Length: 176
Image (cartoon, rainbow, N blue to C red; front, side, top):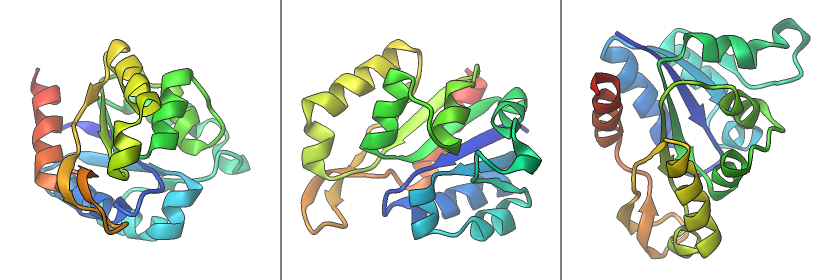
């Protein structure tokens, strides 16, 4: 099976990323998780560590792991960004690297699966769509969000796809 890097960012949909990490691990993959500070406010790093059996990378400035953002990319065969917030998408599109996730993602040289999750108006905003087009231009795969009830109470596109759909997209990228 494959070595996967799961980047979890600060969307309320981060709770689905825990299920995703579990499903990927159960499928036999080695899953290393990197989280933004905002993601950690929603789901604890210990949840991911327990589900994957791997340490979770959260702090770019931890002296014990100063180059971990490079080390985790050396082994990665696929990166999954789920959920991918508008902020993280913008950072990736423009090469900004100011936290554990964005710095790590700037160093990857394997396929990247971006799974956006946000309010439907944010999703449709020209800046977000432009940033996604830029990521596609880099060769990244974008898994379109699902439509439905959103955490903000609105309805529309913006829901993180369910973990089985993300697993299927990841398997397709690994096979192709």
